[in-house]
Length: 277
Ligand SMILES: NC(=O)c1ccc[n+]([C@@H]2O[C@H](COP(=O)([O-])OP(=O)(O)OC[C@H]3O[C@@H](n4cnc5c(N)ncnc54)[C@H](O)[C@@H]3O)[C@@H](O)[C@H]2O)c1
Image (tube, rainbow, N blue to C red; front, side):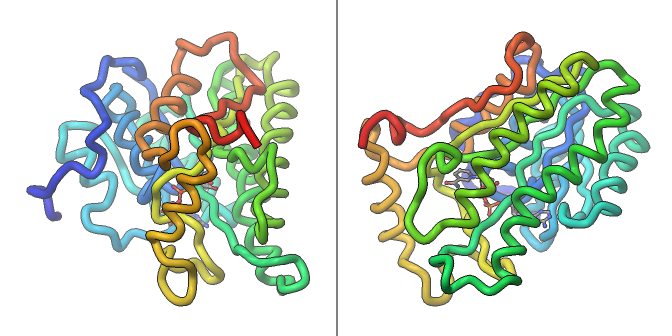
């Protein structure tokens, strides 16, 4: 593990024990928003089950967490497979003895117009962004219901409220996640379970997986510089992209007791992207 490099999340501050004694599962934990959030959860005292489909990243997020004194376990899973989701919950209970928080974060996209989509590409996005959320939530609910408490935070997007050109499947799934969150909040509030989502604007991460998933900005896609400029230009107020840490702190708020009367909510973290046309 390469340890002596600059901290990739310089905005993460020392923890204040806001998740002390909690066990959290983070999906899509090895990159981007999930990676920063897993680290923040650990700094705040949570034991973190880091779940991802890709593990060949040095350092892997759980290694990074343990390196700075936190508790974490890595589980290689594909959130589109129900067996993997069930295995993830079993691993949290087996290793950490409990499960309190789910950050439903893994996601990806294919950017093209509807008439250019193949069925496989369309289904890939719906399966990864929407069906997987259903499967992961279905896997954690029996434990949360038995326990009489639980906290689910999902990763939606400002594209739950607005559309972006050549992004139909992604925008459709992110809007669906918003309303799925409200449905979960309604049905499981009586069990002491809260469900919220974050709606990030343009965040600087290696995102937008292709089909099959590939690193962003490789191949024929727009250059990294162009993507950044386009994203910053759409953020009218702050005129920059956000950092994964800036989303992680919003996730932490929703995952902690500090938000104990908030449920079914979509918290926008967008530097002002949605306040102006
Ligand atoms: N970056 C943004 O601008 C932005 C804005 C709004 C919402 N989001 C949402 O945030 C979430 C994370 O995005 P990101 O930008 O950090 O992306 P990212 O590509 O950096 O990270 C996504 C992670 O999910 C993992 N993953 C992909 N498919 C998986 C699968 N089947 N099973 C398990 N893990 C899988 C990837 O390996 C990767 O580690 C996504 O849901 C995305 O839609 C991102």
